Length: 139
Image (cartoon, rainbow, N blue to C red; front, side):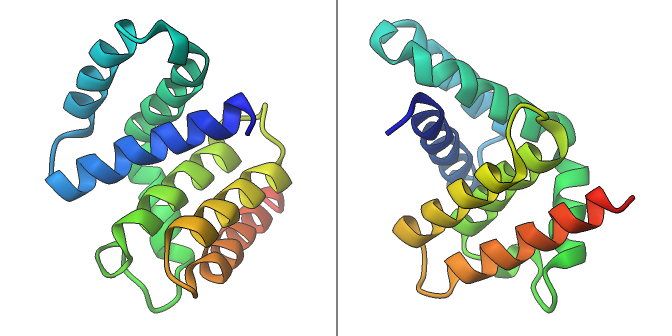
């Protein structure tokens, strides 16, 4: 597993747990930063995980608007919490991180959904992120 894949998983864990516990994301990030400071062996995955979570925090309204716009018939609150977290990471990578190719962002999100969510989630995540990617390259 690559360092970036580990970082995405770490960011996913943070987003998911904050969502379930209804903890403010900034607070969850601060707690994780304290933990990361005492676990230097995990520093490589922490740096990108923090970048992802900071990016989701900074652009959450835009990210959530994109998800709601393209998730036909689904609101964020209807989605499984793990799917919300996966989609937020994927949309952030698609729209706000030029260092990650679109195909990689989508593929990583689909793989996470395949492993961690429902039988239908991978297809849902793939279709939704593909629509968002396409709509933002045609603008």
